[in-house]
Length: 99
Figure (cartoon, rainbow, N blue to C red):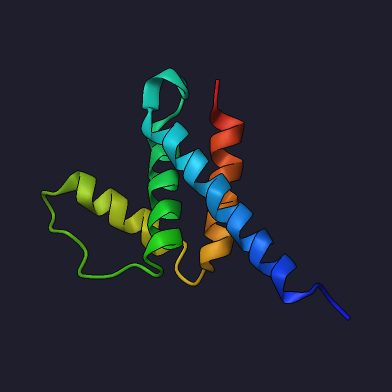
């Protein structure tokens, strides 16, 4: 039963390609996603880090590093999410938030 291994590899490859395309869309920024909020930017940041690095790493930035703290907290919020799930959610969000 189930899919042959080569099909699973293709599915994974497709996900990575879709993720890379979504990341390129997000990186091109305001032109593609003019109405994105700071909270949405933080969510994309966290999903991107989770997809590429895994669970949050390092110490939480200091009190005066507001941006660093916000990024760290957003990433810490999704601790335990699998890389593939993070990629899927990232792609879904970019596609939803694109103009």
